[in-house]
Length: 286
Ligand SMILES: [Fe+2]
Ligand SMILES: [Fe+2]
Image 1: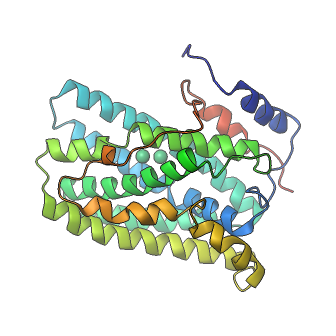
Image 2: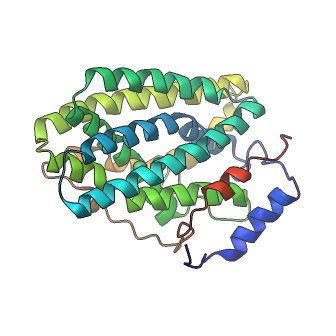
């Protein structure tokens, strides 16, 4: 692709860290353990969800005729495949750092394969829609509030998450549009959406607790005191995810109802950078 990389300075800073084999520090997010736990938890719970989305979108694409929607399905499939590839490398690095990431990737896989076996295609698309709703609002937090901005966050991780969030924003409507094209209705969308929300929440919290326990930090009061206001506060990680969760259940909901301004003008996805991002994790563990 020939489009320029806008934030070339950040790119060079990240590449220089990799070239010099600088480890990604354990608490890469502003040295705040709870915030780092939150992002690392998302990394462990996300790649199997992405592969689930890829398979559902590919199956739905076979049944539609609208060429524009088929193109959007291809973009979704390409982007989620690339994300899963990057998160596999990220999760391998987490394993090496002592976070049991692969264990949770496998647990999520078992759950989602079960859903895939028992759900109809429309129910699978609803599962995609609610996962995309979470990633969309998570992305809004990153792109509009700028939680990753600042010199005290590892540049590589800023780029990894910013890239993921930009692409989530880009394809956020596709699962809903596929569902509508196949005649999906309100009742199925909200009932399965509520069920999968709870399953997703439980999987996420289980992983977060497991990570904290593995690092023997779950009962550390300082971590919670320092991290919790940040985690749930307006500049935190989960604020908009929680704020917008119920918006999904409104009749006629469409992801574009939630505006994302990308206030930091992040534009680092206009060439295929996944291999570069995977390379960030090819550094020694501290
Ligand atoms: Fe993704
Ligand atoms: Fe997505």
